[in-house]
Image (cartoon, rainbow, N blue to C red; front, top):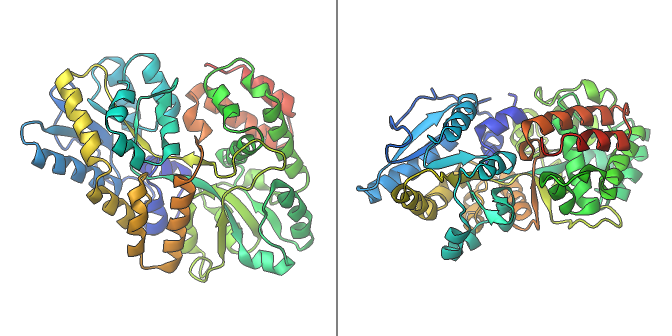
Length: 448
């Protein structure tokens, strides 16, 4: 089984833990991508979303409950496969013919809608529905907020990036998991001396390297460093904390912190996960969606209790809050500014009553996900497998207690900036450019 990040992002920006715990599930959406409701924009309250299980069935059930309870205000759905959705939604919204309810990933895509005045400001809605807002993980609102205003409601499930480790590898060298960046650097020669790679890394995929920078930027300079980049401030990549993070990751590369040949290893093949569960590497920074793959393919690695995991540790002297995390905080629902007042009210009623209601929470947890709502914690007692229960509790605590939940940079930035980012990150890890050259190059695509 392979569970790539591409698969993860297809399944949903926030719901891929399902693929994780389900483990033997699919490598992508399986449904036809055809319309279930026959709806088109402008013909009443409409809702477009992605196919792929278990998310698709949960979304369908939410709409079914709403329509049964509101026979005079029906919501009509249209479902698309991932690539078709991205093209269709962009074209439709640009033409003023988008659906009433807009499913998305937040971040850079949402900002483009806001800049074009295509989505409603929901700040007042959440002011009127304070109880609903208070139930949602606070950090999940970050990727749904633009210029201090909420334009998208966090929904569905959360998936942070996690520092995984092999307990047997640590026992072999008599060491404890790192509690700081300094500990990480101290562990590198110890593992190398034991012929164990300190870190597994599927560096050919590039976004795997990006996760290191996301955490180092946060831990060294705090969340405002990338926020300034996201906000388009000139020369934001040249912030001293940015340059410091770039220098630190190159120190790790030069110290042989990553497995030899990491630039030729792809994450899509799950080879990086195999290096960890076979003991060839001691640690791995990766998405929560890899848990299921390691459980399915790693023999007794997970079931035998040999997998350890933790949030990324602090950097000595850094400004970042150690509770903060990065990854995919949620999926997001916006309301089209072009919809009629009546359809906007129907959409708000759906958001308030049917997206994070008790049946939805039960369904997400039952599918092996942590929904972005505090009531999920009470549902974890129903998880029978002790390893899965402990893992889900960790994901819940990480996401619900995070001061900030930084969205994956290649989702937060524009496509142009994201591609430049991945290209420069690859060069940075190959030591073919300096931190200053990285910053100069990235400053050139700010706002593009």
